[in-house]
Length: 273
Image (cartoon, rainbow, N blue to C red):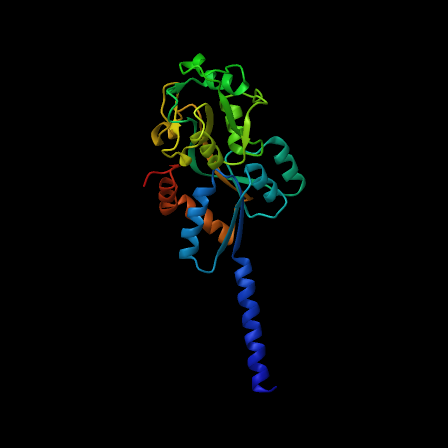
């Protein structure tokens, strides 16, 4: 065969090999908006040290991520809650065996506008507010103002966790303003002195005021010890035990550098380095 043809074929094989290698190193991650800041920072650090790996990341809620894992359109589902029974059953029917990897702790923090003089609420008061039974700030030591209830939407793992830990299964008032992300809740509360919302601790900033719950502030220490009453783990979920690059990425997140990144993003690392 002519040397030029041989060279062309060699380059073609090399190109196909490289493309195949790159495709094999692509990791698709979908799910929780709460977990998003952590995994986004983790992905950037991991790709920097592993140039052959491409991590695609999107967030539409924990439920969307788990659905994508079950549909095999994601390698990793980010979730701020455990799987529901119906999700586990559907996964089993599709030969998917979800494995939860706790990567951080989180405190779900009730927030108000900085102009609101309320500083603390009990779990019961929060429950009554979100059920629509307490409707005025005056009932909990505030000004004579109607409470505007702001909540995450039902596809959110934070919504599920709040429902379990605060509402104990009761329904959120239909008057609640439902928001698609923690960032959106921060924006609403920062502009409305009548409103109350809840967010993951990593989303706190000076535009809103965090409330203590049962007199306990949300901190690294109180979240890890579970002294803070609205604490929960955050997860990366894989189909079975991960392999290849997916395993490498999960291991990185759980390692020293990955846990330092968790802390830098404002969440609570599982391990102090």
